[in-house]
Amino acid sequence: MISVIIPAYNAEKTIQKCLDSIFNQTYRDIEVIVVDDGSTDDMLLALTNCKKKITIISQENKGAPAARNYGFKFSQGEYVIFLDADIVMKPAMLEKMILALKSDESVSFAYSSFWLGWKKFKLWPYDAQKLKQMPYIHTSSLIKRNAFPGFDESLKKFQDWDLFLMIAEKGGKGIFIPEILFEIKARGTMSSWFPKMLFKFPFKPKSVEDQIAKYQRGMEIIRKKHGI
Image (cartoon, rainbow, N blue to C red; front, side, top):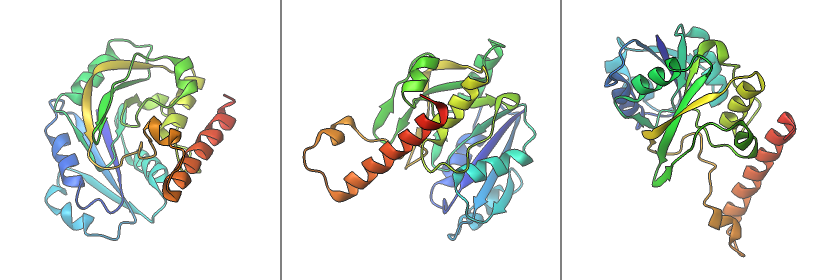
């Protein structure tokens, strides 16, 4: 079984499309856990028609990493995938990912390319050294349960990078599926991504300067934690 865990905060406008893409999967042995991270909108009302198909649990607002870990505690699947509430999967995504994992017993997770808004993230085969240099694997990868180390709840940015570095440090590795298997409709866990050209502008708005500074501080924290 695959456990699909969705941390959701004020996701009233996006979560239904996410859930529809789960219900339309060609792979059927799935449990769906939605973690309401202290939402203040009408998200729970929006889930009314899906209550028989999903498990809803709630916590006070603690952020996505804590919500993912909390949802994992309630899950039972041999495999687990974490979706943000604004992700829409292609119908064969989970089937292709689980087949990829089963094709090589030595791998711990399967990942793919994806769209983030207008930006196509076309990735490449797993490379542990490349992973130390930059974050390129999205949180929404299918992970073997016994390989999942838990998210570091103290991190504000790059939780996905940290997760796969932790897996690598325990000897785990990934398998790449050379297809775009999902789309992030809004922000997602890579919302801190910036086009390279923004770093090169001689004069930047203060809001952009602040975001770049947070991005760089986040990278420094990860590099220090993992000694890279």
